[in-house]
Image (cartoon, rainbow, N blue to C red; front, side):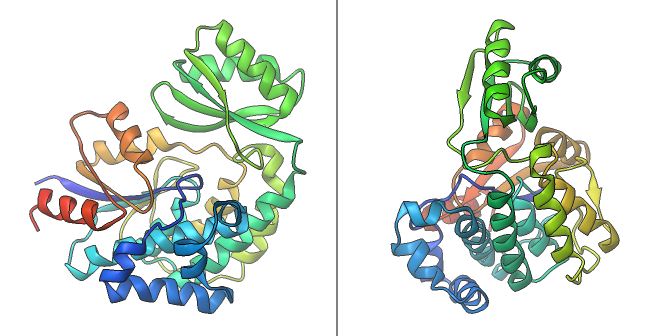
Length: 311
């Protein structure tokens, strides 16, 4: 029998009402929202279930809200005794994966990501940096275009999501130049992203440094389940490695395609995306059409996933 991975979404997946149905049905999921409210001193249920998009889009709100919704959506699986052989999360989602793998408890994770969101937003003034998605080019071509455009300013690959979908980040003029060069190289599209900062590039290093000071005060346990880290695309098992990887992650490209391929090589054939949206399931189809991919974000998707995996 093949292995299973729990994978968790990152920033951008949020929407008003995420996790609401599962929290209404499962006390353990509702408790996760209550724990977040307690440690952050805000009404997480009110903000996520009944709030407005603008408030939810503020990075220091978005990050704890997505981790809360994701860990809440994980609870029904845990109640039913469903476990994973690997975990991974896209950018912010790596914190949800750490909770699932047992290296940190939920309350610690949600407090960390609120600070992470604040530090990332503060690192670069609004309007100075941006991001773009490059569709239809190879990794090598995108890297070459970024190198050529760097004469204008900072521009670097930020996310290697799946074949033909790579995002870049940096200073506005340099990103615009790289987009032109990518189109010239044959990219199908180069799409500006509606983000508030140039995530996962060297401009965010000050945020990573601030985050490291918080991580150094945090106790991590050895992982019960192997976790595949964004920075390396490889497994991390020892608690001693976690701080550096999470601090570097803020200003390093996310090696998502590499992470998925590693799990496939290790025998994973079932991927369950836990939390808002189906973005990661979409990436999966482009990385490997043979692997089974499910998502859990509401009661309908939960019931469908449980039925398909035979629970």
